[in-house]
Length: 563
Image (cartoon, rainbow, N blue to C red; front, side, top):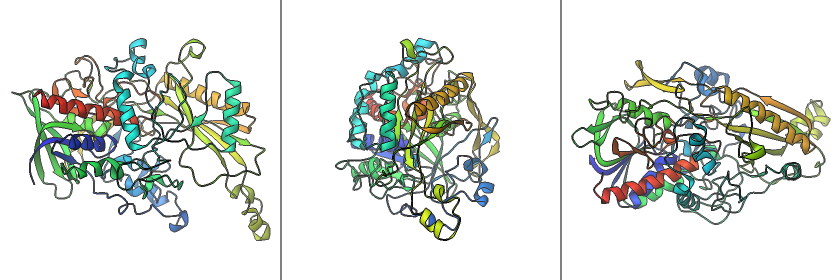
């Protein structure tokens, strides 16, 4: 295998797939590395058509699995029978916790682009300006206008369905037709519209095709199966496997190498540039080196930062690009698992068609100026959730057997509705990850230790998230409304970010406004590690837009001989 390339991309998930596509389409011979196994679109989705009764214990987390994978099983879903093959095994890929941290990962071609929740929201200048205005952490080196054209570009390519609202805190996009609300959700929408002037209920903006087709391997309309995290045989939602990687391959410029554990970026002190990477073959455990003019780290926030931490040299004794000392710090996520539920009466003659893989969304309405500003906490949150008719089992509890039971299970249960808040976590310097060289994995590499938790601002915000959810459900006339806070540890949102943040000053950040390492400009980091603040919106769309923008910049700089 050739050892020299124009570009190297580490990771094949959300950002890695986009880096591969953009660099290859711009003519660069690109080596794309993935630490996990190969996953081919459709043929390697083993559970895509399974029903719960296809599993001996149903699609639940078994006692055996909980005992074998205690950390992964805390999520409540990543070790279910239908999808656990796409998430790593705790025993094979250990990590350490000073404080509870749920590091939920997938090591395979496509990464978490196969299992993501598909919610696709833009950040706004409320988000890009917040740190500077409030004196928190450091200022973002970009603003909405810098990334807006790239949001347009990505949305139109992947296919995002949704509704434009004209809200400054949630910029509109290039959307396919929106999915429809059901009757319970419409009732909530009416109640919120009449009861508040600062909030709106809409359908979630999701990377699902609802009309026409999109580039890739036969990408078609969503079939409303709601089995997305198993891999979609229709390519109806965006994944690297169905979209960007096939586009990269079609150019003839991509070389894909799975089972390749990158652990170091090589550095030339004389030229002040990276020269390539060093990897361990996951199967043979042999070491290999590959060389390139530009390197994109897209392995996910924790993994990309781990690689930089291991990339030590005389120039960078504490990890590549770590002059600021910020590498590994400022871990953020989105805190959730708090909100409210209630019963909706009056629609007993109504039902819904299909299994819509989406819910409702209530955009942020706190701390946007004027009466929305709060005294007790800064930043804000949104809600995801939805209404549905509960299962027949609700009606059958008292009719445990016989004719009454058979009749009961033919009737659907009550309508219910729920709202689950997703709140912003602030960037705290002492929320961090570091490497433990005393505890090595089976490839001889240091394991990651997490020392991070939510703080007072998030805890106060959670109280408001719960209270406002209850209030909105009560306004719509829901019955038996109950609030909940099921507890939360960082990582559980699977939106870990911030460990190699962007900034204006090399003394306080790792990356510049184009996602380049300040001191090693031919290394770009475009996954969650780059985030300077978390906002409250699902971040994947931003990672994709940042990656496309960075790839465009890299190619232009290469042509100018600046890299």
